[in-house]
Every structure is written in structure tokens, then in C-alpha cells.
Length: 135
Image (spheres, rainbow, N blue to C red):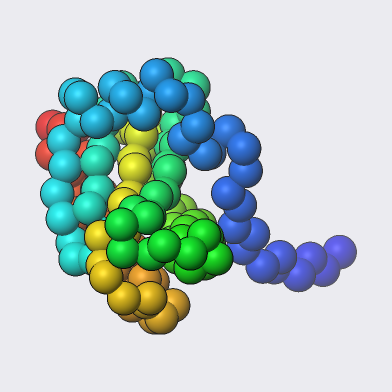
């Protein structure tokens, strides 16, 4: 029987989304942070529910219209969804759990390529941080 290689499917389902107010507050209080312009990232190893949870946000200070904020959040979630597999695999291997929150701090509406590249850099930094914590 011949089997074709199925394409890789990328998901960002409900358990992968950081929604709990308690978890988000704990993330901002206890978590570590760094900036990769135009993203500011908070991350914390103490995640109770899922192996890897992520949230995104955009300030209404620079983007008054909800349409613009929602577009940026949609771009950030899509870029994250397509690049998170290596980080999720590392967490499964190390038996770790991680919460991540990314906040867009730029002042101008970004294009997808910029968001994709920045999110890739963020994920690489998170992988490096998880490897250091595991040692």
C-alpha cells in the first residue's frame, strides 16, 4: 500500500490560547520579558493548563480603530501559528510548560513579512531560553 506524505497541519486551537485573567496577571508579575521591536514579549514557565499557550495584544494608544488593532492581532496569531512547532516540540521533549504574551508596540500598521520575521526571532529567543532553563 502506498501512502502519500500528508502536509503538515498547523493549529492554534482554544487550549493553545492564553485567555485566563489569572494566568495573564501571573505572567506580567512573575514572568521574564524582552523586546524585539516592534514586539514586547513576556514569558513564564509556570503554565498549568497546556504545554504552550500564547496571547497577543495591541495598544489602542497608537491604533485608535479596532479594525487596525484586530488586523495586527490576526497577523501576529498567524505568524505565531506557522512557526511555533519547533518550540512546542522542545517543550514536549523537556516536559516543560510555557505561557507567552506578545504585545505590538510599533506606531505604524505593519506588513505581514515584518510580523513574520519578528515572530520568528521571538520564537528563536524563546527556544534558547527554554534550553537554558532545562539545563
